[in-house]
Image (cartoon, rainbow, N blue to C red; front, side, top):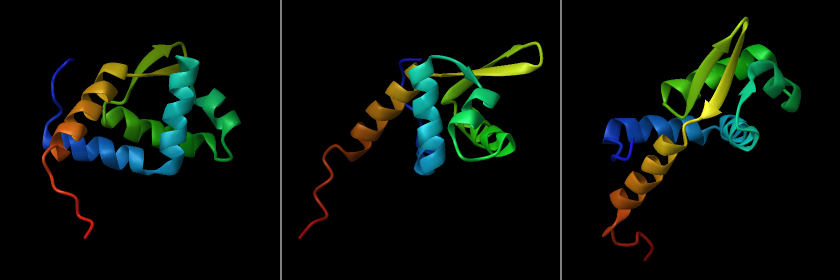
Length: 101
């Protein structure tokens, strides 16, 4: 990747990360390197269907990619996109004066 994230994509990624459960799911995926929906459902107090919905949002934002193996989907974090997101977010606020009085 190695390029800046456009403003629309920046907002999409920010919204995906704003949900605390999705944020923790992404942390779990990053920590595991790669994992499937069923393994994530065992780690969180939510149904597999709910985990699947969260994974869909993360995938649509480009934060995870999916690898299909048999009947299972395996997810891994797209680190390059996350790094680009961080850089773009930092750049978006460079030169913005503080909002505190």
